[in-house]
Image (tube, rainbow, N blue to C red; front, side, top):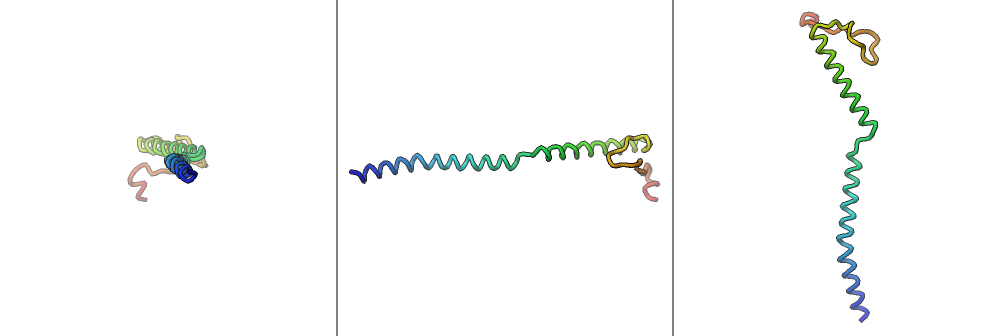
Length: 94
């Protein structure tokens, strides 16, 4: 009689434990994937800084193409003096 009770208990525990272990494994994997994909605060600020820098350079380039003198444009970070950009095709060839 003891063998049957032990067998029944082990089958019930195995039947309940298997889905539980699978769900724990799925939750752990999902958590690991989400943690890996999260952008850190530093990465977010660097990405935003790069986007602003790209927008500033594009705006500056359009201003020069529209005929605004480079000297009148605000200087970017790290620029000691205005950059001499070629304004016409002849200037860029020489």
